[in-house]
Structure formats: structure tokens, C-alpha cells
Image (cartoon, rainbow, N blue to C red; front, side):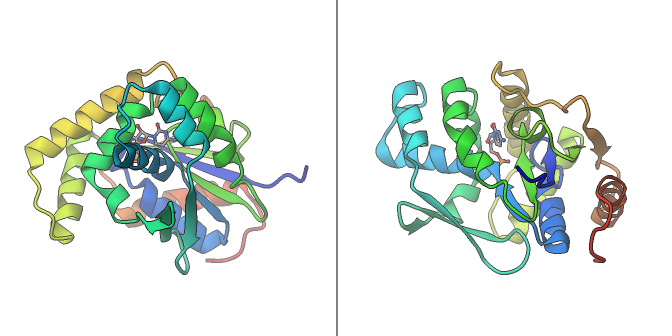
Length: 231
Ligand code: C5P
């Protein structure tokens, strides 16, 4: 088995993982796994089929047979997501879908059912993997493990701004509460809880703008993976 490099980018929502992964994929020309999209797709598929959050057997069956396609739409991590031959790109990005994903994500058998699907993204010339347990469970041998954090307050503000820019109305206090509830569910579950891998490098982005985060990540990647192309 050739040693195909993996960079994992884990952390709670709103820490800038998506932006950093998009930057890395664009720079390195590697494959991209948005593992959160899989959990969101599963939540959406369950909703469409009327499957309840606690119907473990039905959820596992759905996860094993999820008919999903990721279509790379140009350079970077912009990916079109197709569920059962219908576009789902916009629908899976809602707050509601993210929260629903975090309700079914604690089920160990569901996580197990999605494991091989996630590992199938590990192909030449390399992989950038975005999620919660990329460095701890899915790719424990990754060449570089990054864990992004930021205060819940700062993350709620960022999300609020993003939604406003998209013309979606939002309330900062409700967003904060939902983010805190999602963090709590993601970090306290027994199956693959959200936490940095022992060998992960933790980058707190609360007080950094995106250029500073990009500079820090570039430095880490260059140090761990020599011989990369210029940007
Ligand atoms: O990253 P994103 O916000 O798209 O993830 C949605 C939810 O899916 C997370 O809050 C988490 O509960 C779940 N998830 C997970 N493991 C991953 C990625 C996402 O449990 N690797």
C-alpha cells in the first residue's frame, strides 16, 4: 500500500475548517472528504423517509445504502452533493440539518456504517479530511492532524455573519444556544467524541483572522510534508 498522505482538520463548527480545507485542496490538488456532509445527508435522507432519530436499525440500514455522489464543482472544496439522484447541496447546509446530524451521529453503529465510505476517499495524490474524528478514528495515521478551536461566542458571531450574507434571517442568541447544544452532544457522546487526537496540533482561531490562520496552517503543512508545490 503506497503511503498516500492525509491531512485531517477536526474541530467544532464555526472554527473555519471549511475555509482551511478549501484552501488546502486548492493548493495541494488533493482529494477532499467533507465527513460532516455524510452525517448531514444521512439526517436528510432519514427525514425524507420519515425514519425516527432513535430507530437505530433503520438508520444503520440507510447509512449502509446511502445513494450519494460528491461532484467537485471546479477548483477547491466546492462540492455538489447528490442524494438519490437529486441535488442536496443547499438543503444539507441548513442549521436544522446540522443539528439533526448531530442527533444521529452519536449512534456507534451508524458511525461504523459510514467508516469504509469515508476511508474510500483516501486516494492518490493525497487527502484533506474535514470532520470531528478524522484524526482520532478515521485516519489515525494521518501525516498532519490539525484541530481548530474558537470560543463558542466567536463561532456564533461568525455563523450569524455567514447567514446574514446569504440573506437568511438569524438570531444571535438562538444560534449561540444551538451551537452550545451541538458542542455538548458532539463532545460528550461515547462513540468518537469530539476531541483532539493526542498528536494533533491545536490552533485557536478566536483571535486570528483568516489570513493568519492560513499562514499558520501553511507553515505546519510545509514542516510535516516536504517537497510540496508552491502556492
Ligand atoms: O461539520 P458539520 O457541521 O457539517 O457536521 C454536522 C454534524 O455531524 C456535527 O455536529 C457532528 O455531530 C456530526 N459529525 C460527526 N463526525 C464527523 C463529522 C460530523 O459526528 N466526522
